[in-house]
Amino acid sequence: MRKNILVSGVTLLALALLFGVSYPDGLLFSLPISILNIVLGLVTRTPLGVEIQPESADTRLVVDRGVVRASIYQLVFLNSRLVLKRLSSVSVTVILALVLAVVGLGFLYIVGALMGGITGFSLQEYFTQRARNKIESENALTSVGPSDIEIEYSDLSEVRLGKKRLYFISEANSFATSLPRKYPEKIKPMLAKIFGSKFIDEESVSMAEAAQKENEKRQHSRSDRGKFSRR
Image (cartoon, rainbow, N blue to C red; front, side, top):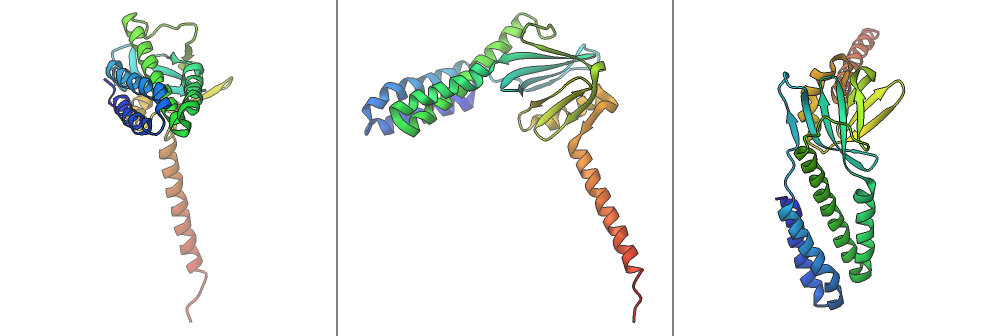
């Protein structure tokens, strides 16, 4: 059960009933949309998030969600390669939400557009979890399908972790994966083990540079004081 989708559905149902008094025709859109969100919240399983495996396993780390160019992937870090399993394409993540928002706009104006956009997000989460379930049931976590991406670690020159993104950099190509807010801190220790000297933590680098600048500033200040004589 996805509590956030369920809460959204209940909230939308309250809005539907509230605005239904003034706009009864809008109930033709708002009531089914609200009930759909509640049903999606009940049937959609909560993802596991970040799974860290023992070092003896071939699969070292699994990240349930990463966004690359509006498509959602499951990141599977193996001993020598990375597999990005596509869970949802741009047609679901962006276009579906936009279509529902436009339809809702015609029924309940801004409120209807908001309901449509939220429902698009709920459907996205539902279809994404269905894709995860399918990968799990088919035992296809480490295989590479037509829509998946495979990267050999030997081809990478640098792996850089920011506050919200993970960058994979090679001589031929590079791309960034957007991550949920709390994921970078969770995966940082394992990424350091997997990639060794290729791994760079942007936050640590920024802190080190700030400390170095502060140290240089203090040394410069001391040297300046020595140039002036007391009267």
